[in-house]
Image (tube, rainbow over all chains, first blue to last red; front, side, top):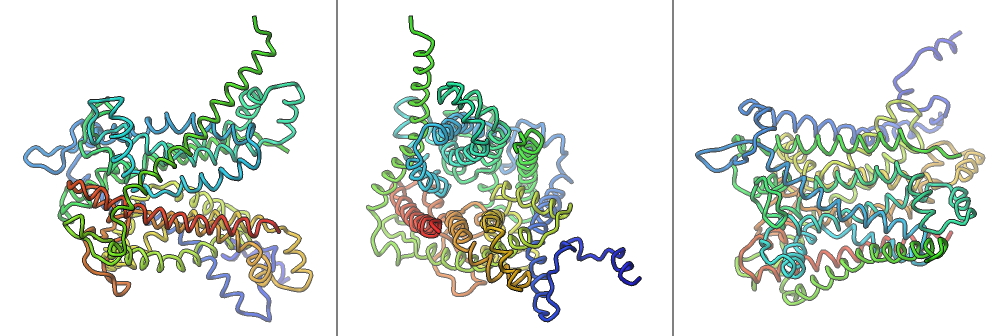
Length: 319
Length: 283
């Protein structure tokens, strides 16, 4: 009878632990403590998310008390620092971020997918084994070093001979550097997606007499499409949030322009500019960075969720 | 008139060359970057560079403050991240039941990995610096970086734990070990090399992080080394960023020297990670 009661009573531990497994050894009470420590550390990640949302909302609340959200989102003039005509239209920063994102995606997506196809269909396994640590190094190069490379090498040595009227700070060199930065991520995630396609499907295509390119383009890529597209979206989200490369190489001029040869400013670049400067804590200019940060957070979060949904909804299930 | 077969073979060959060019592109850029940094960085890189503080004169500028700041921040971050990251991975892989809460935690970790690093700087500023009153200290910086790399550490440790075969766990249960003993004495030792590989790569990433520490309020021009975890600090990448933004042309060479130092650290850590991976993957 008492056993039955215990079964019906749902304790909070069943939320965190599988009731079917006997974790605790009655002779050894130490294990109980271990369980609590493991739960506590796991909660750190949930608290992090809550902390980010709370900080961004409360601090940007101070901003939106004085500036209408509509004016912020649709205004085309961004001048939060210099009196007398301050203006808080975020579109120039969003446009700058979009230029860098599109520019880097144009480089990283075809090159990344092509490299992943080469690694899975064409190259020998020895070649792949050498490439992997090199890609890890490319992925590990600090972004401040990429920014330096864009400013002191890409612009003067590569772009200047092609576009003589390019400016010292420009969107193009930053786009190229961001594209190189996200390239390893596109390669490794697309490669994972291609490798997840069962070998039988690939062998079946070869047995029909297909060439390697036909196998890749008509069988492997369509089969792995959801994984590949989700890797593109994750890389784009990374490009949106990239900070140091654009802060160093793209300039500090928020403007609506379609020219990649001119200086621009991105959302992240603006946040760095303010936090390096001597803007007094608590002023409206100070709170602008949290409003911009909130917008940045929402953009990357929605892209990450879209990528997750694509992976979940359109994944081909193989047995 | 080319036959269809020849045309298909030709397409195949052409694309092979195109893809090969694509994959070489990454290698060529990496080679150019290393060449550029080494050739410029070697000029100002001498012993004095490590023993001098920053200066308004390029010839007298050194990295001592950043070097010590990086050692303090990363040194404090390593135990925190390793403990919390591995423990979370153990919980998710070995303990967590299949329910909505576990799904939520996993989804949340995946999302955290995609949040821009500068947002973590805002979190550090809001929670550690202001709310918990730590000031712009080494401790606040280490905690901020810990939160930033945790998702990466957790996911790679989870993969490492998942790759331990179930037969090992069952053998341990058959010998009468309980759940925690099995995890601690059997699963963890066998997953440790892969956990370490992922962890070292995450540390190497953290050393180069600039934006969250700038956002959090780390200093740029520092004439002292931190003496304790509550002291203010700067790190190597922030000094490099500062040098790139200065108008004097010679600072370009100083920034290259700093970048060279970062690249050397990166090579050492990545080499270590690759070594551990190949050394233990043969088993």
